[in-house]
Length: 289
Image (cartoon, rainbow, N blue to C red; front, side, top):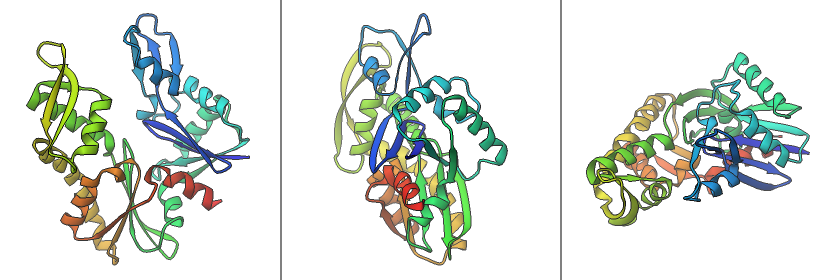
């Protein structure tokens, strides 16, 4: 059985027999002994226990191979997968040496019969021809145009959901003297274009005590739009090579309505969102075989 795998910086997703499984790419260590206490869903559950002193890490954010911090987590996920053949999605810019390093790391973790498939080429085969495809991940965004089955342009931008998260967290700390966690951050991002205010909980940056705060979301639109402009400039650099008028966006950031509105208004192009943007890569991998 073939297993299709997308090791994302924040979430590991894999597809087996038409069923999608996902867990956070998270490791929980004891803060004092550095002993590993859990991976994936278990690590996330442990992080909710206020009595535990934990160090949480996401080794896939670095995306450097071989990386010994990855091995225990990779073995954890391998134990859950039933397949004997494995197809991994791979950024288009990774060269042969990088692929070999990754292959050796995966084999040490127990993955055999490994194949790689490039992100943009795979998504293009799963999408209509002659459109500008944008895949926004947590750490990196890929942009490409394919015509007649051939990749005409391919760009990779070190920008993604993490960039937006960092910008919002810094702005909230500066404007409202509040440090927010991942749950409040997700709530803010989801609400940016829908409501005028949002109540969130965080830690006061001055006293260090927890408190609630009602944030005016309009105060953060400028911060987010500045981040979107980084992507906008890269998209503009692709347009001279593009005769169509459509953009298709996949990946987690495709769920951000404010980003879609920005691309439509700033670039005057027709922007469509994949119906299941986080799963687009997995379904494209399966359809490509």
